[in-house]
Image (cartoon, rainbow, N blue to C red; front, side, top):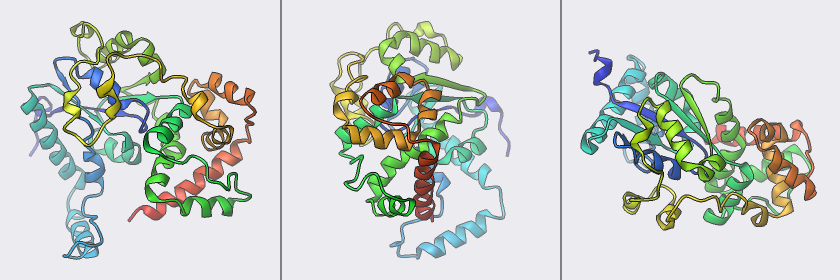
Length: 320
């Protein structure tokens, strides 16, 4: 059954790495009276993995996967998934009496093709933050170790052993940087994509929020000022950055803290994993110069490609 486009919920995807400021941006955007942005739905990740369940499921994980794959293989899985998502987003919008749903889920970089197949018309907001600052936040907020004792490894096989031996939660957080950042960077030329830099957001929040609001087709003047008012909805959720509950105003104090939080060895590892080329491409040439002045060297594209290759292998092994 087809439906008129006007009956479908308006959905926008806010895409950015974990610890890049997505909670802050979504909170500021939903101060517009027509926008709602709950903490982190993770809905697209669940739909993309439909039929794949925990191996301990009493009905048999492989049987569930095989049966659902066979059944959905006879119909258009995309239409089914879109209908489910529309129903979920639509009900949430109706309950909140809003018009546009912003789905802010940082790890959607893992399922971008799936997003495109379900919502090819949906606008994207791409948020980028200095990768050194993202890494420092992973370290200080989540306790993610950025550099193993044996870094740098002597060979590609040594790097593989290092990554494959990491606990899954640590490997996932590092994969966000190594694989997620270039994946999101490649989306900047997409039609209906807006790009926001965290550093610009915290320096000029009013200007940036109004620009994004206008890009979504709304009147930017409906927001008088981008403030930290009413983040209480986060208290009842396990997801989203809890730090903004303590913030009284948007400020740029966190922009340069990475310079004292990261060791030289950590800066080198991040430079190797991200690559000087991508740092410059994203506008972080000044940050690259800072670490180079501290003694960091650009070890070349080949090293970065090795890092990506190893993390891609880890990723492929994790996929059911």
